[in-house]
Image 1 (cartoon, rainbow, N blue to C red):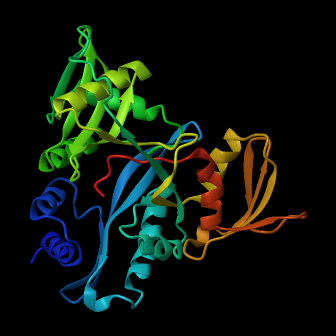
Image 2 (cartoon, one colour):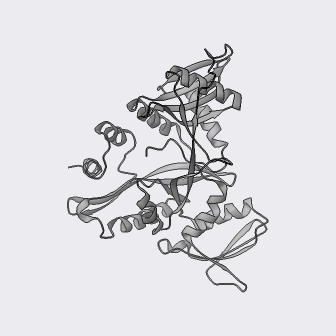
Image 3 (cartoon, rainbow, N blue to C red):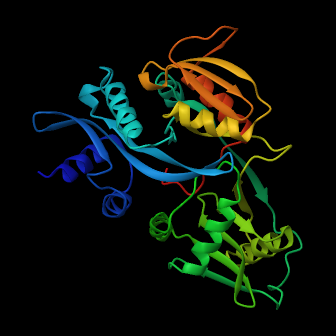
Length: 341
């Protein structure tokens, strides 16, 4: 049996996804190049995929790797196999120039599990129920409303531009967007677009929910008025139903845990952080049990970061890699959306 088929069979053993979703993932997302696994003879004991995503941070776009499909065969769980595979994945990511690893734990207990490998709980989301009160009878004549699951370059470019404006957010390539559209088709969803004079001014990724509402997994717009106009159009086209909006955390909105991150290249991340925060002066002693190249002493002053293997005079803050990840990312309110989770 080919490796891809072995990984696919392990996925089916470990997860409860529909056959349609599994086929989609292995047709459009999986390649042997992004897969890492631990084998014993002809048997796959554990596997994961490292999916590349760009991410905005400190005014730059940095390379990240999203851990997808991490699973261990039931017969080998509790034996440290996944921790060994994660350590191998960290070495692989570091060698490839990846700066951050991200993931979405499937259960609350997995947040604690991944924390033991240096991940920090930093990604949050907010959920708001939008009611179609006093819904207009139709979309104002100046606008056109389109629902589609077909790839259109102008729609992708608009989403890409608006997501890129978020200061700490995972981004999606055109190839990612095609996968998102394929997943939407499976669940009866679509992209809703509002345009004015043939120019996209708002877009939303939507799908039906089990409770009769529709979920808006992403919404971007040129203005609050155009966002509201598109929401009314979505609700009306869906039978005047309420909409569940999933969006970045804002003041006075409750935050829900979503995902985790782990610093893979501490020197690179600290250089970015120092350049973005020239007012910060810090002597740092960093320890990382799984990526030895990160362990050391760092000195941040005047927008620069210097690293030393030897401790220089003065007091130092002692941080583990998960604590550093928390300190560098949490204040930026990291966000991810449209993931295949």
